[in-house]
Amino acid sequence: MATTVDCCATQLIDGNGGFNLTGLDNFIKTSNMSSTGLSYAVVAIMGPQSSGKSTLMNHLFHTSFREMDAFRGRSQTTKGIWIAKCTGIEPCTIAMDLEGTDGRERGEDDTAFEKQSALFALAVSDIVLINMWCHDIGREQAANKPLLKTVFQVMMRLFSPRKTTLLFVIRDKTKTPLENLEPILREDIQKIWDSVPKPQAHVHTPLSEFFNVEVTALSSYEDKEDKFKEEVAQLRQRFYHSIAPGGLAGDRRGVVPASAFSLSAQHIWKVIRENKDLDLPAHKVMVATVRCEEIAYEKLSQLRSDKGWLELEEAVQLGPVQGFGEKLSSIIDTYFSLYDEETIFFDESVRNAKRKQLESNALDIVYPAYTTMIGHLRSKALDDFKTKLDQALNNGEGFASSVQTWTHSILLEFDKGSDDASVRQAKWGASKVRDKLRRDIDSHALAVRNAKLLEITTSFEIFKSLSGSKL
Image (cartoon, rainbow, N blue to C red; front, side):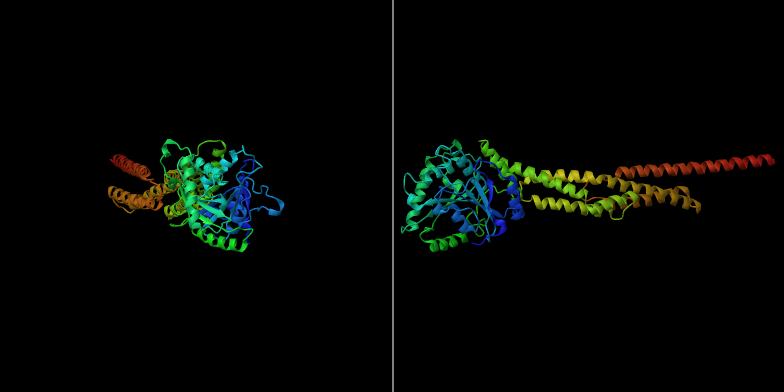
């Protein structure tokens, strides 16, 4: 059977309920799952112990789950919950193998883990395979009935139902045609659904609101191995493009972006172990909040260490930088765009709120450089005014007209410079600095005027004094 490194089975939850966060993070990294956005599917399998669940998954998805050795007895092989990446199936599909139900290792009274793992699978999976024996169809004491009751009961604990596909896989089919078996099975399923106690809000909710029910049948793996493999190969085709409209999980709801799958799964399991009701809409917002905050923080860190930003920040300390605003806007826009790309599949209101925080924090980082730039423009403008006014007066031009001409020219030049320095993402204005520049220009003009008047007065007094002495 074809396997690859990234499909190697990883224990997600051990038999004691311990969550393997490190293992899951490594699995997501090696399988490249995190880059798939919403384009991934999770397929879980439930069923009685030793019913060939792992064998089916390995043939169906080319995974490497541990299988029971029939010659060594039917003891439990899968303990806890295991995951693996399906090989050669698009979109990225994650297989989840659950510990068998009704196992003698746990005992009849220890159903807590069974219910918890079932709820976990329903909360994170798009498709759940229910592995069952053909001879159980229509029987009151069927091995799968307690499992189905568990599935339906725990589904009621989901605050908002996911639209999960239940694919019943009938094992060791007989000569009875599937079209004859399926109505009986669906009737059994409906009876179990009707018998399950429901909260007031779902007393009249039909099964179809929670689940899409599909049925298929397979020959015996032990007695008709070639036929079994042929039928499994046909079934495998149904998992290609499973999330596309019309696919097995085409109308699924409440999908968590792949980059947050680890965080989501860990939190879901924690809530389940604490025996609390699982509010999936609230959970989705929580996951979005945590991940969007993490992504925003990451983008801020990247901005702070961005080579272009550091060079621009250093350059502006030395003097005005041509094209400052466009350069800075481009740098900032890079990280805002990266944030948008990485958060696109999260809850929109959360995504937008965290983006505003990112914008505010990013602008706080670069604002000192902007004020330095505007300060340079103001200083240069004032120096230019002083120089131009002195030149005009030295050339014999009139004081009032020179002040008016160069005030207008210098302020116009300042306006052009401040426009060039403006940052697209900010609403900063240079009006206060412009007003200060205007006051400084007026003060300098007044000082020059007073100096000129003093010079004229002094000259007149000297002239007057000299003229008087001659008389």
